[in-house]
Image (tube, rainbow, N blue to C red; front, side, top):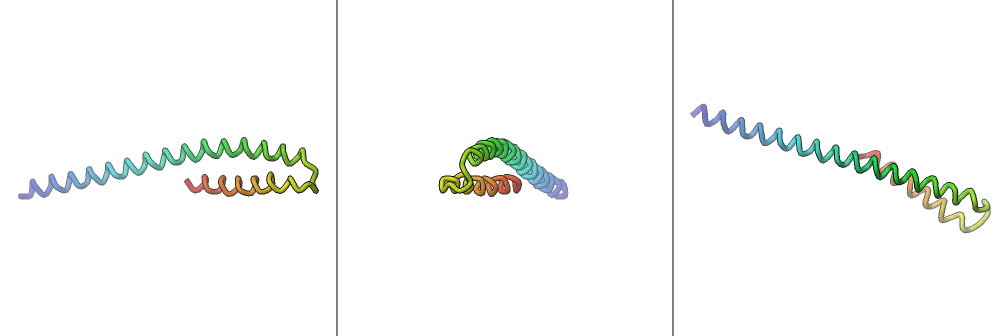
Length: 82
């Protein structure tokens, strides 16, 4: 019966190894998506910065670009967790 136990243990080990490979693949995919998303955010940062530069510092319309920049900062921090 030892042979049966060895086969069972081998199957269990192979299943665990496959789970680890799957998790690693998901992590790699998430990291790639986060990197690409971060690149998009950097473009948005640039355009918001240009918009802020075009508006006078005392204009009420400056609130929206400022708030957008704050939210983008939060989004960048989120992508760093991936």
